[in-house]
Image (cartoon, rainbow, N blue to C red; front, side, top):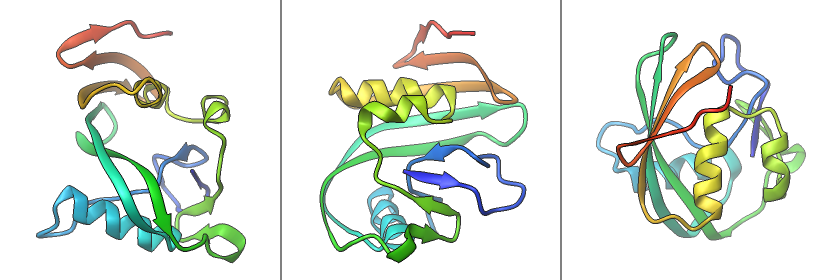
Length: 145
């Protein structure tokens, strides 16, 4: 996990998120995940799986699409001090992640991943930092206040 504590004016400031970033011109989502993981962690993924597409809608930032991956194998080690340009990297036990300061909608897709859900499309709608709507494969989900 990446604890976002370094960038100014960061919508993810002080939150814990997975590593990743934006696709560069000409990159596929697979190309992007391999590059971003290597750049942010120094690790080279050797076994990864595309798990879902998450659409983030907000009244604060433009709509974004996240290609969601999990990895089962990699080569390399985390950098000394576990720092990267955007924050601090830390291996976190899966059971502990929901207790960290994460986005409310992240708990939904993390649960789906843990349950082994097949490929899914998840739409998360935020007003500020408050999740107001979640839609999984076209079906509304209950949203906790």
